[in-house]
Length: 239
Image 1: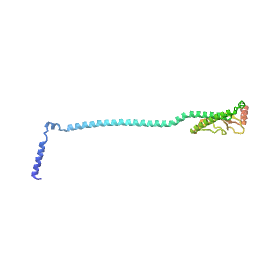
Image 2: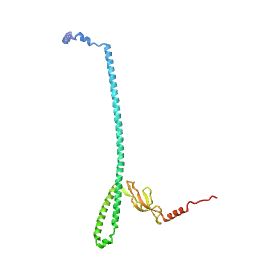
Image 3: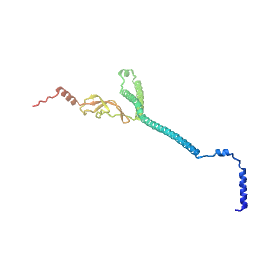
Image 4: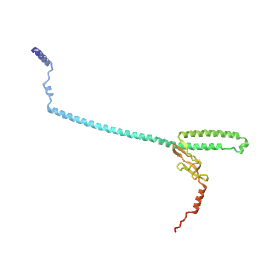
């Protein structure tokens, strides 16, 4: 490099140094850092980092406990909701069964009343007074209203899958029938239902009401039972 250029650069560097503010020696001495101070600061920084790490770990543990509690609560709540949903059909069924039994009773009464109206015959006094036509019209109107109500009840019961139990002419089923009376017919076997005294019903395939029936018991069976009771227990002698 040229000597003249070096001189110019040195002059520029001296001018730049001259423009810098002067620093007191005290400040310069105060900014000096020895190894002891450095290690002291490092130890303090290490302790501070360790303390903050413990605080962060404690916070994470607390958050983890909160999350576990929330998860357990959510699981428990989900189980309660599932149990509540599964219990709704049973509760609905338990609440609906008494109402269906009342509707069945009401249907039987309408049917019995309609049967009476259809088999009604005017008395001699009514025929003599010439009121037979008026009474017949009145009975027809009442029977028509009974029939409409009966059909409406049957529609409601069919909508809930309530069906009548077939009983007459079938063997006695102790699970769905109750023998209320006995009949003595020689043309039928023992245990055959001869008449329905009170109709039974099924609700969605399950028993809603037992059927009360009259069950056949052949006459010879009755006589044989009476004779067996009269004879008493047989005594077998040992030779």
